Length: 277
Image 1 (cartoon, helix red, strand yellow):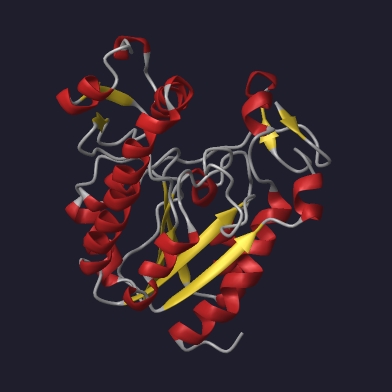
Image 2 (image 1 turned 180 degrees about the vertical axis):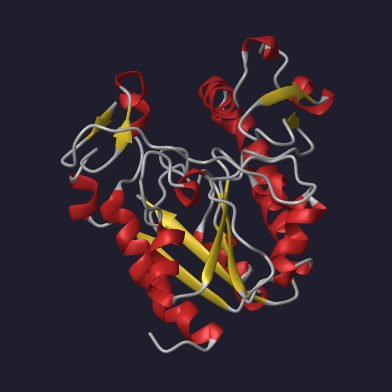
């Protein structure tokens, strides 16, 4: 294993489940009997290759239990379709929802795995009709499939893009509607939400500023964290991974970026839960 700048060791994610949910989350499993903050998110919230992801850092600084419900490669599907997870959100003092990519959810054009949302299952008849020249049996992952469709015909792909973006907003509204308490929408990544080129270079894929602003009146607060140049320049320093995992680790945000996310969240969450920080 590699643990840059700290020494060799192995990172144990202590995988656990909550209640009736079939989704495996990062442990240790936290108590839901006392006041807590819930974190819904993807790979960044989970903290892949990071010993202390930002939910842990927030817990240390606020002093309130933080339940990490981050799921690697998750889309909204994981949370919107799992009634127990929305119950956890409903029972939280505050629920933080990371802005997730738009491609990892079932829609009119294709379906995804209900728990491993990055997995492409099958196209709809509508998508096959739009892209008659594509063999969808070649694809296992959504990103691979969408990248190929965009390369085949950017003009035809525009219809797919628009459907995913409309579906994302609708699914987010549905999820937020099932969480009656305080909510924080978190943008956390390398990209600037105002400068997204085609929106398919950095996660969250296909999300625009306009889509985020559409939800402003449906959440309590919004927090944006674009990893600084300093954080991005750290590479894999402080991350934990095997040599086989190095290519994946090099694409992810490291400990400094997580510290920046925690620093942005702590004053907001502290105010919402009534703690002076």
